Structures are given as structure tokens and as C-alpha cells.
Length: 54
Image 1 (cartoon, rainbow, N blue to C red):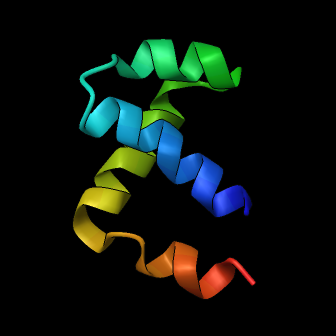
Image 2 (cartoon, helix red, strand yellow; image 1 turned 90 degrees about the vertical axis):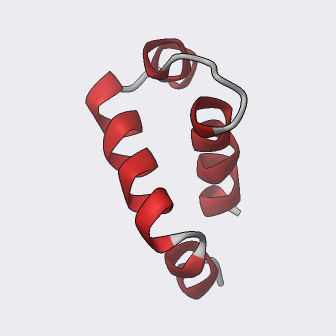
């Protein structure tokens, strides 16, 4: 379920317009990770999450 949580946070950035810095602050991670994940999910979708979320 960790992947789903991650997707929900990235979705805040991609679809809800919440800044990546705010999302990163909420997750207590580096903002560059949020941007990297967002680029990945824009390109690949949830495919990787679905494969690894077992």
C-alpha cells in the first residue's frame, strides 16, 4: 500500500495544484523527489506501482 500513498501525494502536486515543496514538506522528504516522482508518473502512470504493490 506504500505505492498508493505515494501516488496520492504526487497526485496532490500534479492534479490539485499543490506545490511540490508543500507536498515534500508534508512528507518530510526532499522536494526534488516529488518532482522526480511526478515526472515518472506522468510518463509511466501507475504501472510500476501496480507491479510492485503486492
